[in-house]
Image 1 (spheres, rainbow over the protein chains, first blue to last red):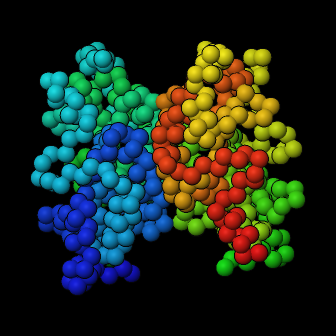
Image 2: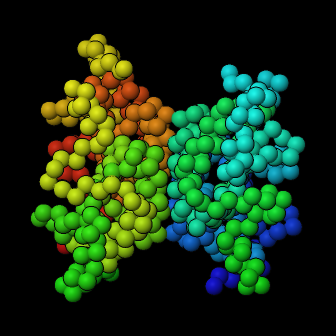
Image 3: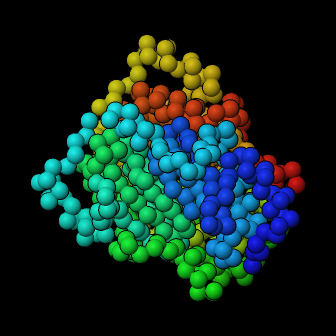
Length: 122
Length: 122
Length: 122
Length: 122
């Protein structure tokens, strides 16, 4: 069984993920990253590669997709917190996402391009 | 541009979708269905077919996936409500999902198999 | 490293795969199955699940897709022949394909539905 | 129905595709390109985006995948030759493939990385 990350592991591993846009989730030992691709096709290409990695690691994300946006939360349900599996999946997702735009402010509502388009028209 | 469904359209089209497990979203003119597959592979097979249809219709779902669960919300952002596109996408998703289990009570928290496993152990 | 199947393994494992439509490839220690789905969407749903399994097993098919047809050849390149990995991938593909039509005569040209359609028109 | 490309269309459209690695198929009015990705994950990310485009155009490739290699042939079966749909799908595939390596000599056997690995060991 996978162990929760130790305090030392966290200090060693989490800052680099913070730099690529992963952030803590309030009230939960989990990581979240909000990726904004150019369109659904790009978002789906990313998700298709991430799905292969998730199945390979036997560790799966909670993720929400709306058109070009993929909003990912990683945690290990068995131990109710972060483990090495979350680090590995987060790093793989960063490789697959390349230089895609990241929404760093998680307090803001996450609006996809189609919602943005609709509100400009309103 | 796609028009909002008329009252007559709603009366004609929505009850059949209600029977397959689509329900209104409180405070929003949208449809929601929570599908529970056997595992991630089955859920991903469904999502892969739904992605093809979404791109073909140029109309995309808001959907959240956690392991075996796919939680779908359909609405048309351009007109902030339900249109014929939502009906078409909902029906296609029903075809792709086959006889998959549906969680009809949307007030209950949606727990995936991995969360269920974790809580049985606790 | 994975070993070639022994003569006993072959006698035990291959007949069941023969019944679901896998057949030997002339001049090569490999298995081939030709699946005919209803359309591209169904074929792609199958391929998406098979891709997850291939990456999980770290063992990948040679496969050709034309619209509704998926023509799969399995062999283990490292040992130039059939291993347990090919059996596992073949069985998983059978589960994902369900009751899809199989073209058992590999001597016949594999014509996809769109080619068949074109020749009926000609 | 889609028309065969005229001689003028061919002169205007095909040379640019030739530069990105598409080439004529002997004895057939079709285009072929052999893409060599770094691994299966990259190849599958490409195929997943190309599948969306194929379904959107209602025009599908003949393609063969072996691990990192995707060998694509495009033609329009209804008219037994090249049409505007083939040009559109070829260009979309070029966008999705980015700077991936291309095998320009179609006379050579197409060996995937796993076959290459196996022959180095032999």
